[in-house]
Length: 394
Ligand code: HEC
Ligand code: HEC
Ligand code: HEC
Image (cartoon, rainbow, N blue to C red):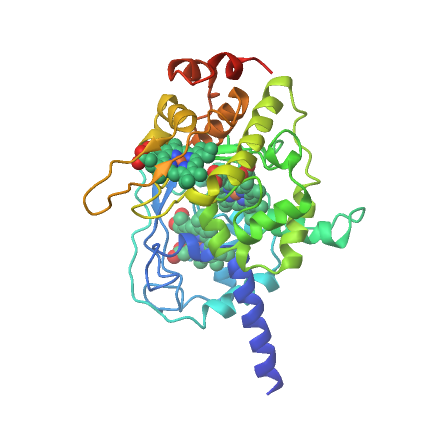
């Protein structure tokens, strides 16, 4: 009876850590009814790997593995046959967890339905398909060792640091990488572009978080949006499957830690960049989100989904600027005689504000369009009613 209660506590703790570590995202095909059964292709700088089946199926999953073998995979990047895992499996971060943590994750995974699903993991070209090469990688980029509390910091800070550096593996996307795909350890969380997505600098240096309060960071992690931004794409998935499932105390702890991670001092240019995006995000939430939704997805058949709009995704900002300045009226059809309209904002926003909201939309949902978006020329071209007044520099 006592043992049963203990098992239950371990399984619950393991379930929580499995969310914190987002094991399900890579090890499940999105939308599949068979969580953890593998098969999702993971893009890496070198090519595609397919995440294996980690359900308790004895033949095609990890049902027959010992706890030690499981621990070696999760914290040391070793396969059952002793060969090395590719770091697409974020073991360099998971190494910060304790053996107890990993045992509890295993206890939880043992309670899910076993699924028979053989997966061929390795689709990399030669010589990257030689796992031996990973010995060099491990030597360069893998530092074993559990998370150690920083005694000069608060309990809350340390909890946040553990979650961010360990199970949360936030650096896997947010830390710049070397040409071999290893973390640039001197630049933690300073931003990286992967799979066409910008994972921004999330230090309190020059990135957007410099302007966010701790509560705004916590709100973003818990709900996927705040007054500055809404999570899309890869981060939307992280929020949905992982951070939104954490307790309020834990997201606050992560926010406390992130607000204390120092980054590069803003240079005149880069801080202007981050400030523009922050300002643009605030304008968006204020003026645009009522129709396009704070996550940009709009309303089917009525309001366009900006996360998939070609105008947002092209390198040329002209159309986005024109739509914001002039508004747009969709073509009325028989079935829908009054096509919904996009109001003009040219009379309400100055050039700087139009540029900012256009930059926000294009950076956020247009995948890595980093170049500034200049409104003044476009305003001239669309012949606003009061061009002189509007074009006046601030
Ligand atoms: C970012 C994607 C990603 C996340 C998150 C992730 N994994 Fe993996 N995992 C992989 C990939 C890809 C492989 C295969 C790597 C290889 O074979 O070199 C793998 C391999 C494994 C293996 C080895 C399985 C085998 O058959 O060799 C285990 C066990 C495992 N993961 C468990 C976990 C657990 C537990 C978590 C959460 C704590 C987790 N993974 C989170 C991508 C991920
Ligand atoms: C799989 C890659 C990935 C992982 C893992 C990841 N992020 Fe992100 N993150 C992104 C991307 C991409 C964006 C930009 C999202 C967008 O444009 O909507 C982002 C955006 C953010 C933002 C908002 C920044 C802004 O200016 O809008 C915060 C805060 C953040 N991430 C924190 C975290 C934390 C904390 C973790 C770890 C728990 C984490 N991320 C893990 C990819 C990732
Ligand atoms: C009252 C609702 C409403 C508001 C507020 C609104 N929009 Fe729109 N938006 C629309 C509609 C409806 C369309 C489609 C018009 C059409 O069919 O041409 C649209 C189209 C767009 C497009 C073009 C999308 C495509 O598919 O090519 C962009 C970009 C855009 N809006 C950005 C914004 C921005 C930025 C703001 C805030 C400054 C904003 N919208 C505010 C309703 C709105």
